[in-house]
Structure formats: structure tokens, C-alpha cells
Image (cartoon, rainbow, N blue to C red):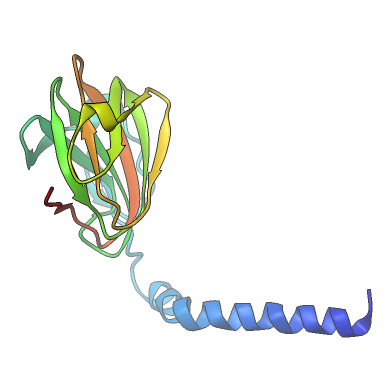
Length: 169
């Protein structure tokens, strides 16, 4: 490789590194001087250390929507940083069309979720995702979830702060 090409690549690499440090260096420096910001919700309370969950330790509570309960496993969706939430939808439940300001990665743990993109929760326009399936929802994308004859459990990961914003049809 020519010296000019190597020099050019080094300049690009240095620029990328400086850009990354410029956007995250302050956060990294703060984290080095202070407690880690990631809180893990374990069976014995919140911790900044590794927590190992057993199924009996996860307590799902009402999520403010009929037929839907959830538990925060890592982080807090309302605060900056990574979060992971486990959600259970009872049989015959529709999570009406909504958006989130962040991207979400969803893994189906059990049952089947009918997931659709759009402003109205309509089973005819949803695609089934069974246990082991994964789907990605881009930020600010109107979407909905439906269960039919059986309950379903899924885990959703994202980077907060986040919230669920209802969408008008």
C-alpha cells in the first residue's frame, strides 16, 4: 500500500476517533469518576454489579394497559442508557398502535405475538412471531401487537430515555 493511502486512512481513523471522543468522552470520563449509571434490577434490589435472574425472581406487574404486565430487568426505559424489559400479554390482548422515540429489539420468549406496522391494530395486517423470533422496530415507527388464543411473553431492549406514545388512527 502506498504511503499516501496509509496516511489518508490514518487521518480518517483519527477523525473518527476524535468524533467519538467528542460525543462520548465526557460521559466516559464521568463514568470513570462516578458510579456506573447502569442499574440492574435484581431479586435482592438494584445493583451495579452482575445479577443472575431465575424465572421465579421475575415479578411482572401491571403496565398500565389491560392484559399487559411487565418487569424491568436492566436499566430504566425512562432514563438514559440501555434497558431490557420483559412483557407478558394475556390471550386476546391488543397493544394499540404507538411509537417509541428509540429503536427497539424484541425477542419472543413464549407464545405468539402478531406484530404490525401501522396506525391501527388490525390482525389482518400483522405478522406472527413465535418463540425464538426477533424483530426490530425503528424509532418513531407506528406499530401494534396482538395476542390471540394464548398468552405471549417477550423481552424488549432499547436505549432510553424512552416512552410509549399512542398513535391516532
